[in-house]
Image (cartoon, rainbow, N blue to C red; front, side):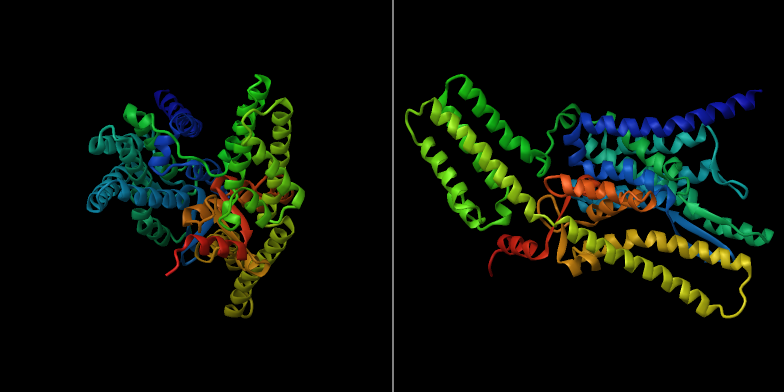
Length: 491
């Protein structure tokens, strides 16, 4: 009776792990955004953990194939924690001395690995398992280890807790046991098809790191929790000019005509400054002219500029200034959209890339039949079809991420002349393009191409959902080169 009750409590605790960890991460991020960004856990990383890891559950990358057995890395339960841990380690090196970061990270990996190894066991029928309440030890031990090192310095402690919890579980519970798993299969004459992190978001690799991170954030100092978030280069665009436009309206209502015109002109100038990367270094009337606006729009700005210099403007002057400001901002918004890659070019690029992925999968199939001429047993055929299918399905993540990271474009984007940039219109880092492409899996798996196309067509920066989470945009490649040349000092 007690065993049944104990097992039931363990199952309930395990099932509560996931929603509480997800809700906890989201709530903490919303409550302490500045702290999260300083430690390297911004919207992109949180989105990768919450969205990417969930949908990555269906993707395995076979890495070890031996006598009819194979072991794979799960995208959501192993690869994403590895990428997040590597990213946090790089941030940790910036926040600490390099040798200190290496020493503490190595100690954390050793500590987490030993704890995870001691509380887990390999059962051929179930895989690597941990019983209740032992499976609670790695996350809380990892949090305690990080707090012991850094106390209330959450900027260093939380990343260390995540690395210790997730990578400790990966090494101690999974990697160290690979010889045992394959050896047991060979001794019993059986085969094993396993996945490291295969339980995805329910795997100890994923949950240990996430729970340890959440617990450690709670102990961050009050000063760190009060840190302000850096300006979001996309989300804050509309707020910047719309707040001035709102002030212009209020000033007009309060009969403060000069203030109204001042705010109206400021709103237009702010909007113009936000598209300065797309044009020569000009301001005001000259910027509008160089951007190719109609002469009437340029004249509207001239009128607004002249009204702002008036010493005693009247109601009509302020009202016309507000109308001109709204019209000019609408025209600039329409022009700004044209700087981003058109849906037709992105669709064409996707079709080309899709053909590349299909070609890769067919090549693997052709190689299998070339290397196995004649009759192939049904079991062997099904085994290799499973392997090839997994490689083909997972190839998209490697293909898109590596190509966009190294070249800025996939083959499809190179053909159509478009490239990926981050929201600062700079070359994106690996975790940025990785996040962007991991969250594309629902599009492939559920055929949600229409939703992505809708996002691209109806957002100011022509972003699909992956672009929004990763904070990326897709622009004309020649335009990207012009932007880069303007930022690179002449030698």
